[in-house]
Length: 325
Image (tube, rainbow, N blue to C red; front, side):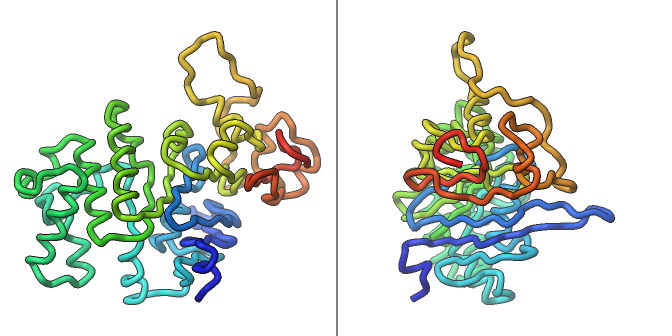
């Protein structure tokens, strides 16, 4: 049995690099990222728009092939698979997209949309497909008799996301990558979808990689949190520790950005507001140094590695807010 299976790690990403050309230049979307997701846990992956978190999720599924590094799922390196072998493995990994309405074919019936993964997987028995579709629709709160024959435009955004969740779960995968699954929804609907994902995690024994830019959302569902900035990991740790004792200045900035319904409370981290540098020409050393009040020459000269802070918390910072440098 592979080491990743023995120690309970369902997914291991090792030194992953994703780069792609834009004209004569190169976008450094993901740079030397290593992380793992244990069986049955939810790992939240957070960061600003453009930090590479969605690219990382797609690279895990091999929807975008990595430039370098490994993606080990249940002991198998997905980067070495292709063709039919990769297709078979993808039955065990699924993706929930950010925009539920845009991810549904407007001309297909809901039952057919949900059944499509079964068809692709080679399940030819129509009765068996119908049985599985009805079961998963019921599980996500959709009536298969009234909803199955309708088209996507007849549903609200929240209902469309339930359809997308049903489509992702119909093959009963082990790992589901949730790419900003509530960011396109009304605030009033977000809690319902988050609760549904938690229910489905328990019902199907899922492992989740939950990608979001909103730390408040991630806190509600995650066991651990990984923070990305400009293609690199800044910090990884248990959710409670990340929220109560952030070690990286960027994590502290994200926490300060969470709205608080009290105008007398002021931000505790004084970091210049502005756009991050371009991933086409990222800064040397620590990529956050151009916005960090603690940066010095060492931060420009050396890339800080992820190193232990305390209690399973890791931070890539020469001058962490907690622990020793």
